[in-house]
Image 1 (cartoon, rainbow, N blue to C red):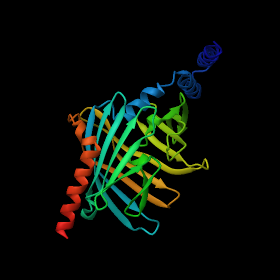
Image 2 (image 1 turned 135 degrees about the vertical axis):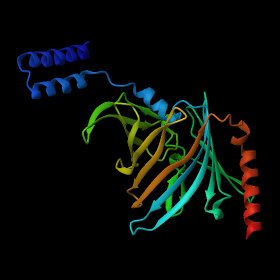
Image 3 (image 1 turned 180 degrees about the vertical axis):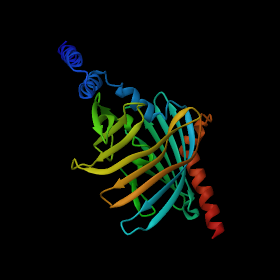
Image 4 (image 1 turned 90 degrees about the vertical axis):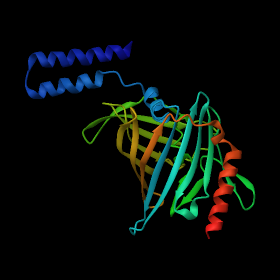
Length: 284
């Protein structure tokens, strides 16, 4: 009741000012008051849209990651990401396309609601299945990237608030704070997300480490419709801890391919890596 009372006062004050003074400044004040009084977008809906790739059933994407060190040295890795959603979570199968010497590297990850993510790789030479958690760092051409980042930040494993408005560079953004759920083995205890209020697309993420300070800044540089789904196609990452700059580009993506559940199994992971290792060794 107090909330609605305060909103009513704001609207009455704005209306009173507009009646007394029709100058541009009074009009601007009215616009600001109206914007502040408007209800916030549904934070849960915005987050769900982001973590389910705008509500698709599955997708296949080819992505390029470029790293740049402080001295200007660049490295590139290209990967293929296959991802399938269900009522209980999501499954991901990630493989390296290039460089060729890394073509036998792959990761299987299974995310279940309310449970820590289970990720696996396979060591063909040792015939050993390696289990990874979300906070596990992996080496990619000079950069350390956690499993959590490769999975799109696992925002479904966080609790979040209702959001608040924040004016940044003249834009009205919705700031949402994400706090990691207990015992999820996540790399980042807290994430601060910013979404454009106009269309509710993501603008940037700040990833906070155990010390509470920003470890990485993720800027969404481009979002565009592909197959009628809002798709993040270009992301810039500032890694403060490693003094690195990274760029992720979605080079190709296809939605709702009807991916088989067999792709997201340990058996498929072992078979894929074993075959890729054999081909790579034969080529050498």
